[in-house]
Image (cartoon, rainbow, N blue to C red; front, top):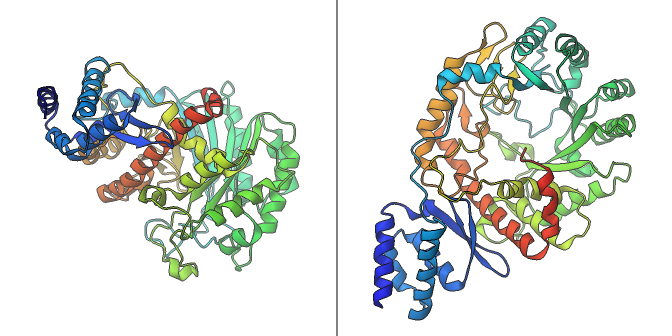
Length: 516
């Protein structure tokens, strides 16, 4: 080992004494190798020797281990020279140990909320005309409520909207939830008309998710009269895929009713630029390329569906449901479809990458799946100097970004958090003490020690939704999300830079959109 190498190792040993793995990660495309730096958000191309040295540092946290690499002395010296130059000029490998998240002070929260709640989500009903086998709202899932006959009444809805009207900015997204929202369409319509009457200067786009089976010509026609309306339609794919899980109370498939409802909306919305339809397919195991291809091909065959319809999909969230009781016990990937551990963590992401590389027609699931992941990479913050703090992963400011109102008038952070602490009600408004305690103080206390040692801390999209239970944040549940998030972010880094190398034009439209 030469003198220069010894000096370089000594410098690196003085640079850090803790976990190097938090400082960045290495990743490879088909043709190149790269290093992502946590502190600055920068990405650098590496030659094989530089890549080997950086990988060794990040994996071992011991610069002395570099001497065990099978590199020629000249290559090792050049690699170390380049890395030390980047340390000096580009400030890599210098991310501070994050001690806290960048969050507002408790005293600031009332002003932030009064400055304008951006979205209200009204739970119109706990009723549903379907009994989807994977639905979380059933007695076999201990983490959520059961199916119910409870509707929200007008008095609760009115109080919620009155509260919002005093804490709204120039725009309010008015969203409806269930159960199946169209079960209580009368109240939906009443809420829309009342909102317009008490907030005349506010832009109020309307949206909701539906299983489509209750869409009538009359409902579609009314929605088409609204200035702005977006409907997310639940449709899982071709008939045999959709009907395996999405069944009526009597156990019959709902595919034909759903397709009929979708056609009615397409017809009513035709030519209305500010009316949008989206489709979400819930994909169930086995997660295999043939299954993904089949679902994707189905949506491409719907020639009557507008070309700009966003078609997205999501993994099924089974909660505590027993899959063996659902008659669908194969939960692993098909052999030969995906190989590495990272790819098995996010098989949909791997499939989207493969499909976009091999298919010139980007309409369908693959584009949306890929876009959602890659936007976080494209829009990441890049700085000259390492940032001193990190935000709370993918979390919003509760009560400001969105406010969920249950059928009985309680406030929650969002519709995805069935079992979680309340943050107020329609009578008293938002409870600042509860909001700060559960969603800032507790989240910080239980998360920062893990996030401070994670290279993906500034790319992370984990939010409150999968991490909470009735009494607050479940640290184990949150940690269970972290491995998959890191794997997904590394795949996205790889995919993004693969596109830069081979098809940079596919990234141009990212400049026109933002992370949802």
